[in-house]
Length: 262
Image 1 (cartoon, one colour):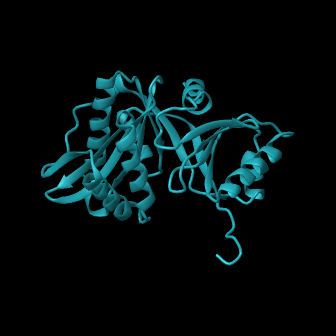
Image 2 (cartoon, rainbow, N blue to C red):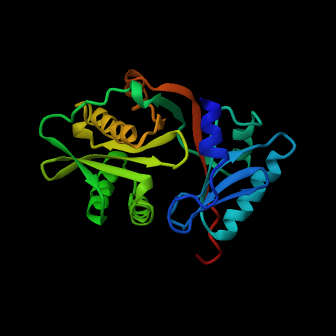
């Protein structure tokens, strides 16, 4: 399963795949990188390196993205080589964010009938108004600015709607949770992303209902597996639902230095 995930979702991406306007997938110097606008997710998705090539490949990506003036993420997995890749990224000036657990489940084995708690309805997100509700939830649930995320989601809904299903849980007129399901056509995996619930609604089954909602969509689309990068908070819930752990993934962020006078 891990080999299939690496092959389909990291290594063999289509260079002109439907990832949004202006997004490019490039292979250069032993890595596969995703590049978009400054507000987009710019990252190294895959690397095939060893002790003799890693440092130069890291330096090359730093030079490349710094020349573009954008920060980027090196998405490192626990099984990536060389084994000391994390230490090399740290030495090159990257900052690690909390590690997450790569988890996968067969859609056919998941509970699909979990309903939201009483008084909560699930609202599909299809336009800018829905995206604003998602951003509101994101900022409350995670305590971070959701402006760039909102632009990414709206770009994707506008240019490649077949690759994204987004949903907001509403308690009356108040958004309390949101999540999205991302598809990559031609693969066996759909990704669960952004699941977050405001503090006062946690522990009531809203998150589980959003898992079931998205699993039903994946089933209808004929996608056999769901994948998620799980936080420490969501991992126990996903494990109880039947997700298996395949390893860990850590985002290493590189922020180019500001130009003089900026």
